[in-house]
Length: 553
Ligand SMILES: *[C@@H]1O[C@H](CO)[C@@H](O)[C@H](O)[C@H]1NC(C)=O
Ligand SMILES: *[C@@H]1O[C@H](CO)[C@@H](O)[C@H](O)[C@H]1NC(C)=O
Image (cartoon, rainbow, N blue to C red; front, side, top):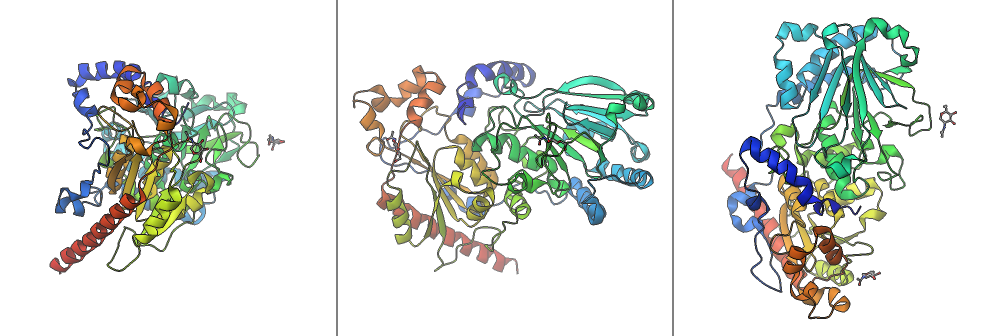
């Protein structure tokens, strides 16, 4: 599977979901969802410079959602504060008394800290007094179109090798299961989910726990656990970000890294890029060692046995989704996520000790030298005039950084991206890294010939991500004279003369295969001109900010 192969299966995979949804909510106008702004200029150019829509737009560099009053976050800070001195290092056995006391206080706080609406509603059915004494829970939220999430609270044990998860419950009302959960946020996608381990979870009678010696705890943890699968299409930046990094961030962010991660279906060292697990974007989200579900040994080669917790979340919540096949209403909402995408970069940078001295949001004062990163790919969609573009950027008054993302270790990539004011890249999975930019940055996506135009879905996921990120988004549409496709096809071929018909008549995957196989260039004088333009705008924005700060004084 190529990293964006999901488009191809879009139609038949979504058809059923759409029908269901239409029946339920009365249809959302699929056509309008897919409607893409048609390109007026046929060959040269077209820049979508959203920022020029007006002053408000310029000022809207942060997410629109106010999260300041989110009780969930307040609750979680408390949890971290109370646990931090030794809780952070409690991988081993802890005294039973101590454990019980801790358990009571934790559960009280954990109860306040649940993010998802639906689970929250279930909790709200309990009175406050009940909630404080209620120490066991077994809740599954299967309402999201993307993901199922189950939360087990009490004496929860994970057999790491088999992937079985049991809550030993004292309360007979809790007894349940076994239930199946596939902990991966593509549940509508049969093709992806075939590659995702089905976990069996259940609640058994605590009184009978001695009858199951193989369920004896190898170690007790004070930190909660999160269990997820890195199967499906994971293995390339787009799906890694969309299906793991962002939902994981949403799910564990408020735990301040005091969470034990269990990963199923890890196919290869794809977060590693040669780095130890702890130095990856997933490693950045926990201070504990990452555990591999379905394997006898963990990432450090030690036997994992039965790991015991007071709270385990199975599956990742996902409201920071890049694509918008579900209308983007439930699936891309920072308020539902309880987390802002613009906090993702600082969060992982801190976890990787990759913070940079640059200001938290992009600032380009008059006379300063902004930094532009130009991504070069290997193999396909290579920028043929890359060197000339770098030179042109320098000439436009920028410091130009060449980025070959797959050759950087995660720490280096995070550090590099957090220093950029402008990111330029040809369409491709590496653009998902824009989630790491600082708010206020500018993203320029270069769409190869044939990949822009009426009805294409190509590239929209990154525009969505940029919007969420508070970044400004531009597109450059590569014209016919700047693609290597002219060497591969006769000029009369529909691939060159009528891309619309190719997309209409071919299966999306087939069309994508054709148009992904090209190298492109962006005329460097044009590139320089746009960079000058962008620089002026960034300075202008800075001024605006200074003025509005004056006004509030
Ligand atoms: C797994 O762990 C056991 C016990 O610690 C050890 O003997 C064995 O060599 C390990 N296997 C691998 C593949 O690391
Ligand atoms: C694109 O450029 C790369 C690197 O220069 C080269 O290996 C590849 O053959 C080129 N592909 C096409 C379709 O021109």
